[in-house]
Length: 260
Ligand SMILES: C[S@@+](CC[C@H](N)C(=O)[O-])C[C@H]1O[C@@H](n2cnc3c(N)ncnc32)[C@H](O)[C@@H]1O
Image (cartoon, rainbow, N blue to C red):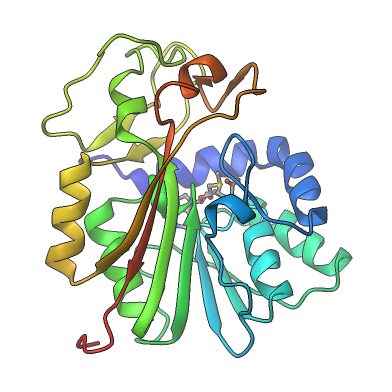
Protein backbone atom coordinates (compact mmCIF):
# COMPACT_ATOMS: atom_id res chain seq x y z
CA UNK A 1 0.00 0.00 0.00
CA UNK A 2 1.94 3.03 -1.20
CA UNK A 3 -0.79 5.71 -0.77
CA UNK A 4 -0.80 7.84 2.35
CA UNK A 5 -3.40 5.79 4.19
CA UNK A 6 -3.16 7.94 7.34
CA UNK A 7 -4.07 11.17 5.51
CA UNK A 8 -6.79 9.39 3.54
CA UNK A 9 -8.32 7.82 6.63
CA UNK A 10 -8.11 11.04 8.65
CA UNK A 11 -10.02 12.89 5.92
CA UNK A 12 -12.62 10.11 5.73
CA UNK A 13 -13.20 10.22 9.48
CA UNK A 14 -13.21 14.00 9.75
CA UNK A 15 -15.95 14.04 7.11
CA UNK A 16 -17.88 11.11 8.59
CA UNK A 17 -17.69 12.10 12.27
CA UNK A 18 -21.11 13.76 12.21
CA UNK A 19 -22.70 10.41 11.31
CA UNK A 20 -21.26 8.67 14.39
CA UNK A 21 -22.37 11.14 17.05
CA UNK A 22 -25.73 9.46 17.71
CA UNK A 23 -24.20 5.98 18.13
CA UNK A 24 -21.43 7.45 20.27
CA UNK A 25 -23.97 9.15 22.54
CA UNK A 26 -25.95 5.89 22.91
CA UNK A 27 -22.82 3.86 23.72
CA UNK A 28 -21.52 6.41 26.22
CA UNK A 29 -24.87 6.10 28.00
CA UNK A 30 -24.63 2.32 28.08
CA UNK A 31 -23.21 1.20 31.44
CA UNK A 32 -22.65 -2.33 30.18
CA UNK A 33 -20.14 -2.54 27.30
CA UNK A 34 -21.39 -4.01 24.01
CA UNK A 35 -19.06 -4.85 21.16
CA UNK A 36 -18.82 -4.75 17.41
CA UNK A 37 -21.46 -4.30 14.75
CA UNK A 38 -23.87 -6.68 16.45
CA UNK A 39 -23.64 -5.29 19.96
CA UNK A 40 -22.48 -8.55 21.56
CA UNK A 41 -22.34 -8.31 25.33
CA UNK A 42 -19.30 -7.92 27.53
CA UNK A 43 -20.69 -10.69 29.76
CA UNK A 44 -20.30 -13.03 26.82
CA UNK A 45 -17.03 -11.75 25.27
CA UNK A 46 -15.03 -10.39 28.24
CA UNK A 47 -12.80 -7.85 26.52
CA UNK A 48 -12.25 -5.73 29.64
CA UNK A 49 -10.93 -6.65 33.09
CA UNK A 50 -13.82 -6.21 35.56
CA UNK A 51 -11.73 -4.05 37.87
CA UNK A 52 -9.24 -1.70 36.21
CA UNK A 53 -8.40 0.32 39.34
CA UNK A 54 -4.80 1.45 39.33
CA UNK A 55 -4.35 0.45 35.67
CA UNK A 56 -3.14 2.73 32.89
CA UNK A 57 -5.14 2.01 29.74
CA UNK A 58 -4.89 3.28 26.18
CA UNK A 59 -7.41 3.14 23.36
CA UNK A 60 -5.86 3.27 19.88
CA UNK A 61 -8.31 4.88 17.46
CA UNK A 62 -10.99 5.83 19.98
CA UNK A 63 -13.57 7.50 17.72
CA UNK A 64 -16.28 8.93 19.97
CA UNK A 65 -14.51 7.45 23.00
CA UNK A 66 -17.12 5.17 24.55
CA UNK A 67 -14.66 2.29 25.09
CA UNK A 68 -12.39 4.76 26.90
CA UNK A 69 -15.39 5.73 29.06
CA UNK A 70 -16.16 2.09 29.93
CA UNK A 71 -12.53 1.61 31.04
CA UNK A 72 -12.55 4.82 33.10
CA UNK A 73 -15.77 3.67 34.82
CA UNK A 74 -13.92 0.47 35.77
CA UNK A 75 -11.28 2.56 37.51
CA UNK A 76 -8.57 2.89 34.83
CA UNK A 77 -6.62 6.04 34.07
CA UNK A 78 -7.33 6.32 30.37
CA UNK A 79 -5.56 7.84 27.37
CA UNK A 80 -7.59 7.79 24.15
CA UNK A 81 -5.90 8.46 20.83
CA UNK A 82 -7.45 9.33 17.50
CA UNK A 83 -6.18 10.86 14.27
CA UNK A 84 -9.45 12.69 13.52
CA UNK A 85 -9.97 16.04 15.25
CA UNK A 86 -13.70 15.90 14.48
CA UNK A 87 -14.13 12.52 16.13
CA UNK A 88 -12.17 13.77 19.14
CA UNK A 89 -14.32 16.89 19.41
CA UNK A 90 -17.39 14.67 19.87
CA UNK A 91 -15.50 12.43 22.32
CA UNK A 92 -14.40 15.44 24.40
CA UNK A 93 -17.96 16.83 24.51
CA UNK A 94 -19.35 13.48 25.66
CA UNK A 95 -16.65 13.13 28.32
CA UNK A 96 -17.60 16.57 29.64
CA UNK A 97 -21.32 15.68 29.65
CA UNK A 98 -20.63 12.46 31.55
CA UNK A 99 -18.03 14.11 33.82
CA UNK A 100 -15.47 11.44 33.03
CA UNK A 101 -11.81 12.32 33.04
CA UNK A 102 -10.01 10.93 29.96
CA UNK A 103 -6.83 12.19 28.34
CA UNK A 104 -7.65 12.58 24.63
CA UNK A 105 -4.74 12.92 22.20
CA UNK A 106 -4.87 13.76 18.52
CA UNK A 107 -2.20 11.45 17.10
CA UNK A 108 -1.51 8.63 14.68
CA UNK A 109 -1.84 5.35 16.60
CA UNK A 110 1.06 3.96 14.57
CA UNK A 111 3.49 6.48 16.15
CA UNK A 112 1.94 7.98 19.26
CA UNK A 113 5.02 9.69 20.66
CA UNK A 114 4.07 8.40 24.13
CA UNK A 115 6.78 6.94 26.40
CA UNK A 116 7.75 3.25 26.30
CA UNK A 117 6.03 0.89 28.74
CA UNK A 118 3.46 3.38 29.96
CA UNK A 119 0.31 1.20 29.88
CA UNK A 120 -1.01 -2.00 31.44
CA UNK A 121 -3.85 -2.42 28.96
CA UNK A 122 -4.36 -1.42 25.32
CA UNK A 123 -7.49 -1.83 23.25
CA UNK A 124 -8.81 -1.08 19.80
CA UNK A 125 -12.33 -1.69 18.54
CA UNK A 126 -12.35 -0.97 14.81
CA UNK A 127 -9.70 1.75 15.36
CA UNK A 128 -6.01 1.01 14.72
CA UNK A 129 -7.24 -2.60 14.58
CA UNK A 130 -8.46 -2.04 11.01
CA UNK A 131 -7.21 1.39 9.86
CA UNK A 132 -3.48 0.90 10.49
CA UNK A 133 -1.01 -1.61 8.99
CA UNK A 134 -0.73 -4.44 11.55
CA UNK A 135 3.06 -4.67 11.38
CA UNK A 136 3.26 -0.98 12.39
CA UNK A 137 0.52 -0.39 14.98
CA UNK A 138 1.07 -3.74 16.75
CA UNK A 139 4.74 -2.85 17.27
CA UNK A 140 3.66 0.51 18.68
CA UNK A 141 1.17 -1.20 21.02
CA UNK A 142 3.95 -3.55 22.12
CA UNK A 143 6.24 -0.59 22.83
CA UNK A 144 3.55 1.19 24.85
CA UNK A 145 2.73 -1.82 27.01
CA UNK A 146 4.51 -2.80 30.19
CA UNK A 147 5.67 -6.41 30.48
CA UNK A 148 2.60 -8.42 31.52
CA UNK A 149 0.37 -5.87 29.74
CA UNK A 150 -2.61 -6.94 27.64
CA UNK A 151 -3.72 -5.94 24.16
CA UNK A 152 -7.26 -6.69 23.00
CA UNK A 153 -8.52 -5.76 19.55
CA UNK A 154 -11.66 -6.30 17.53
CA UNK A 155 -12.08 -5.88 13.78
CA UNK A 156 -13.40 -7.51 10.63
CA UNK A 157 -12.80 -11.21 10.21
CA UNK A 158 -10.62 -11.99 7.14
CA UNK A 159 -13.42 -14.21 5.77
CA UNK A 160 -15.68 -11.16 5.54
CA UNK A 161 -13.06 -9.43 3.40
CA UNK A 162 -12.66 -12.25 0.88
CA UNK A 163 -16.46 -12.42 0.60
CA UNK A 164 -16.73 -8.66 -0.12
CA UNK A 165 -17.39 -7.76 -3.77
CA UNK A 166 -14.84 -5.43 -5.37
CA UNK A 167 -17.45 -2.70 -5.97
CA UNK A 168 -18.08 -2.21 -2.23
CA UNK A 169 -21.40 -4.07 -2.06
CA UNK A 170 -22.18 -6.01 1.16
CA UNK A 171 -20.46 -9.36 1.54
CA UNK A 172 -22.07 -12.45 0.07
CA UNK A 173 -21.33 -16.16 -0.22
CA UNK A 174 -18.83 -15.96 -3.11
CA UNK A 175 -15.05 -15.69 -2.74
CA UNK A 176 -14.37 -12.34 -4.44
CA UNK A 177 -10.75 -11.88 -3.38
CA UNK A 178 -7.73 -14.09 -2.83
CA UNK A 179 -7.04 -15.18 0.75
CA UNK A 180 -3.33 -15.75 0.07
CA UNK A 181 -1.37 -12.53 0.37
CA UNK A 182 -4.20 -10.63 2.08
CA UNK A 183 -3.16 -7.15 3.26
CA UNK A 184 -6.51 -5.33 3.45
CA UNK A 185 -8.45 -3.23 0.94
CA UNK A 186 -8.60 0.23 -0.55
CA UNK A 187 -12.24 1.33 -0.40
CA UNK A 188 -11.63 4.89 -1.57
CA UNK A 189 -12.82 4.46 -5.14
CA UNK A 190 -15.42 1.74 -4.91
CA UNK A 191 -18.86 2.37 -6.45
CA UNK A 192 -20.90 1.64 -3.31
CA UNK A 193 -20.23 3.35 -0.01
CA UNK A 194 -16.59 4.46 -0.54
CA UNK A 195 -14.46 5.02 2.57
CA UNK A 196 -10.77 4.69 3.44
CA UNK A 197 -7.96 2.17 3.40
CA UNK A 198 -8.36 -0.81 5.75
CA UNK A 199 -5.94 -3.53 6.77
CA UNK A 200 -6.32 -7.20 7.55
CA UNK A 201 -4.30 -10.42 7.41
CA UNK A 202 -4.99 -14.10 7.07
CA UNK A 203 -5.40 -15.84 10.41
CA UNK A 204 -1.94 -17.42 10.11
CA UNK A 205 -0.58 -14.01 9.06
CA UNK A 206 -1.85 -12.48 12.31
CA UNK A 207 -0.44 -15.36 14.38
CA UNK A 208 2.97 -15.17 12.66
CA UNK A 209 3.14 -11.42 13.24
CA UNK A 210 2.23 -11.72 16.94
CA UNK A 211 5.05 -14.27 17.27
CA UNK A 212 7.58 -12.05 15.46
CA UNK A 213 6.77 -9.12 17.76
CA UNK A 214 6.72 -11.27 20.90
CA UNK A 215 3.04 -11.23 21.85
CA UNK A 216 1.56 -14.41 23.24
CA UNK A 217 -2.06 -15.22 22.42
CA UNK A 218 -4.44 -15.54 25.37
CA UNK A 219 -7.46 -16.27 23.20
CA UNK A 220 -9.13 -15.74 19.83
CA UNK A 221 -12.85 -15.21 19.30
CA UNK A 222 -14.84 -15.32 16.06
CA UNK A 223 -18.02 -13.28 16.30
CA UNK A 224 -21.33 -14.08 14.63
CA UNK A 225 -24.55 -12.08 14.54
CA UNK A 226 -27.15 -13.08 17.12
CA UNK A 227 -30.19 -15.09 15.95
CA UNK A 228 -32.55 -12.12 16.25
CA UNK A 229 -30.32 -9.76 14.19
CA UNK A 230 -31.59 -8.30 10.92
CA UNK A 231 -30.48 -5.80 8.28
CA UNK A 232 -26.92 -5.00 7.21
CA UNK A 233 -24.25 -3.47 9.42
CA UNK A 234 -20.79 -2.37 8.31
CA UNK A 235 -21.51 -3.84 4.85
CA UNK A 236 -22.25 -7.25 6.38
CA UNK A 237 -25.80 -8.65 6.14
CA UNK A 238 -27.06 -10.22 9.39
CA UNK A 239 -28.02 -13.41 7.57
CA UNK A 240 -24.42 -13.76 6.36
CA UNK A 241 -22.99 -13.01 9.79
CA UNK A 242 -25.15 -15.68 11.42
CA UNK A 243 -23.33 -18.43 9.50
CA UNK A 244 -19.89 -16.88 8.86
CA UNK A 245 -17.70 -15.02 11.35
CA UNK A 246 -18.00 -11.31 10.54
CA UNK A 247 -15.64 -10.15 13.28
CA UNK A 248 -12.63 -11.37 15.21
CA UNK A 249 -11.22 -10.51 18.60
CA UNK A 250 -7.61 -11.16 19.57
CA UNK A 251 -6.58 -11.20 23.24
CA UNK A 252 -2.78 -10.86 23.50
CA UNK A 253 -0.19 -10.46 26.21
CA UNK A 254 3.24 -8.88 26.26
CA UNK A 255 4.92 -11.55 28.38
CA UNK A 256 6.32 -10.59 31.77
CA UNK A 257 9.86 -11.51 30.77
CA UNK A 258 9.67 -9.45 27.53
CA UNK A 259 12.24 -6.76 26.75
CA UNK A 260 10.58 -3.34 26.50
C1 LIG B 1 -14.97 3.09 13.77
S1 LIG B 1 -14.05 4.26 14.70
C2 LIG B 1 -13.50 3.30 16.07
C3 LIG B 1 -14.09 3.80 17.30
C4 LIG B 1 -15.22 3.06 17.89
N1 LIG B 1 -14.77 1.93 18.67
C5 LIG B 1 -16.22 2.60 16.86
O1 LIG B 1 -16.26 1.40 16.55
O2 LIG B 1 -16.98 3.45 16.37
C6 LIG B 1 -12.53 4.35 13.80
C7 LIG B 1 -11.62 5.44 14.34
O3 LIG B 1 -10.26 5.12 13.99
C8 LIG B 1 -9.61 6.36 13.80
N2 LIG B 1 -8.35 6.16 13.07
C9 LIG B 1 -8.16 5.82 11.78
N3 LIG B 1 -6.85 5.78 11.50
C10 LIG B 1 -6.19 6.11 12.64
C11 LIG B 1 -4.83 6.27 12.99
N4 LIG B 1 -3.85 6.05 12.10
N5 LIG B 1 -4.52 6.64 14.24
C12 LIG B 1 -5.49 6.88 15.17
N6 LIG B 1 -6.81 6.76 14.89
C13 LIG B 1 -7.16 6.37 13.65
C14 LIG B 1 -10.63 7.18 13.02
O4 LIG B 1 -10.34 8.55 13.04
C15 LIG B 1 -11.92 6.81 13.73
O5 LIG B 1 -12.26 7.73 14.73
